[in-house]
Image (cartoon, rainbow, N blue to C red; front, side, top):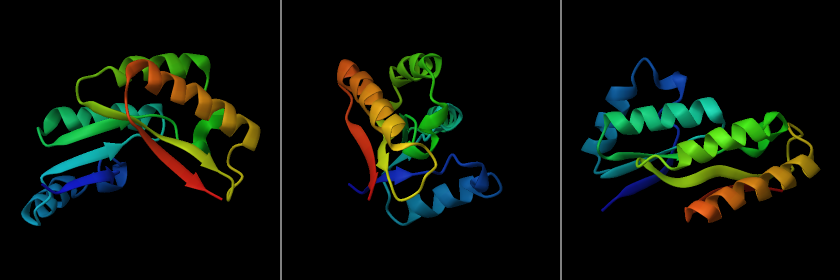
Length: 131
């Protein structure tokens, strides 16, 4: 079985040809795809796409670039989304010190917050790490 564990096929950049891209992946032998959320909106989009295709699953979470905007309300919404039956992992979460999109201390705190949700729900984690 061939599983593509990290796609962003739900991204709006694929709106024009998403179904063709999915078909090419299937033709090439990809049996399962996991599309990875990076903020609240893309987490919702990942689930929506996973609901349309039996071989696509979703993850939910907030990427370290975006955690500066991560509030407790958003964390609560993500926790609810993470319980959806099409969600197979929590992420893409982690640390990225190469870029300064979110302060390091906030990245560390929000990484811990999101790890806690994943642990509570017994979900594997998709970790982003750079520098």
